[in-house]
Length: 221
Image (cartoon, rainbow, N blue to C red; front, top):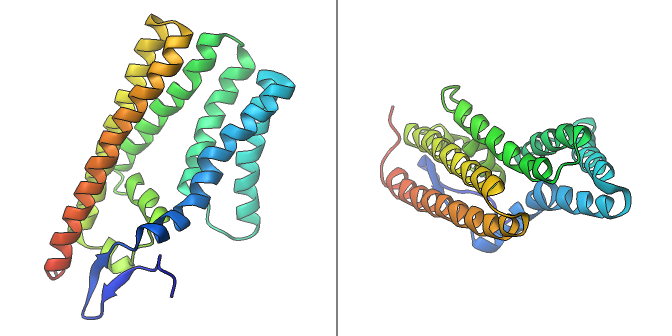
């Protein structure tokens, strides 16, 4: 049995234990490469040869081509790939219209803002985006995901990440219009990483705390 397989107690199917770190990384790496690293690499490679418009077209073709390929083969489309599709769509739409440096750097910020809205909208719909992303990184049993406390946790984490992304976007917007391009590129990267690290820490800490409670108590009727 693969290390990434979830572990459950035979008499308490709602329980769940995190697999080993190596198994998590091996499971999550392909999705991260496909949805995050590859679109950026494709864009910059095409940008160096074909310019801004060519880079945008190449990134869009990569992401939507990946979605079409998965659909044709009957495979599920990962949430990271769907998020990448949202991002490249926004960037391509603005990139075709203008070649302004400000507008160019504004595009990923607008993508971040849009993702914040998506995270926020998933909460009242009862389909938390955080849960979809988490289950792609760490396979979890259905019984565990149906636990009331687990459902509440992912709703709250989706709300948390909507605030994290809103903060990311607001800081980026302020710096874009008040700092030089050079300062913006380096300082924004550091701030975004810092804000994201806080979100990751709270998410992981909360999930471990959730596991202790769920695994220690029987599921509610």
